[in-house]
Amino acid sequence: MLIRPPGVYPPQLDTWLLVRALSEAGIPRGGHAVDVCTGTGALAVAAAYAGAARVTAVDVSRSAVVSAWLNCRLRGIEAEVLRGDFTTVLGGRSFDLVLANPPYVPAPAGTESRGIARAWDAGTQGRAILDQLCSALPTLLTPRGVALIVHSALSDPDTTLVQLRERGLKAAVVARATVPFGPVLRRRADWLEAAGLISPGQRMEDLVVIRADRIRQ
Image 1 (spheres, rainbow, N blue to C red):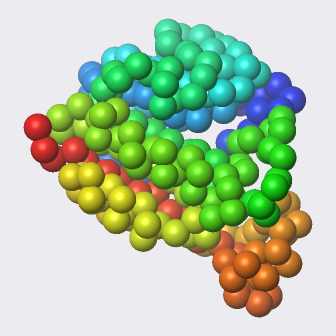
Image 2: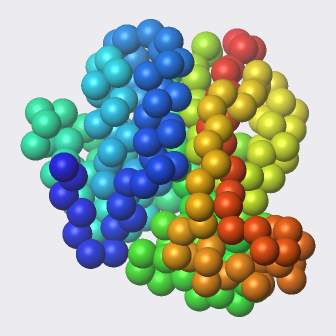
């Protein structure tokens, strides 16, 4: 059970797919992990349970920061919880493990994302945050550091793989699941079809977890 104030994204199938990938990743114990776009802190908790000696969690939402702090403290995890944009608030620090379930849902142009919608709306291609994360990862990762990122196939995993590899990281899809559309995608199905992001009548999406390893010193 996780404390989740109103306006904080609840852990869902994408969260648990990433948790499963983490459990299978063989990450060495004792490192410093960061949970980007933490929400309730579910992935920060998972990182601690997987053996991280230190855990940092980051989110732009004040409610999410409070939620993550409480959920970690209730489990005896003394996580550092920061509010702000991960591209600036982390101040150039590097981590042995980066976990991210960022916003990745495509949204019509001009969509004003407020409240909990900030946890999923990510521009017309669903990549507004993903592109920033791909750009930041070479700095965010220590030598031999590992990142695990979950997002929808609607947000083009191939682009994620290409961007990571172009920045010198080893990258591959390590987990995948096909799930029904949730409420947001169901509401946007007509627009997604018109935009060519889904096939006519499509109401299922693939979720993927991409692993990125820093292999250059």
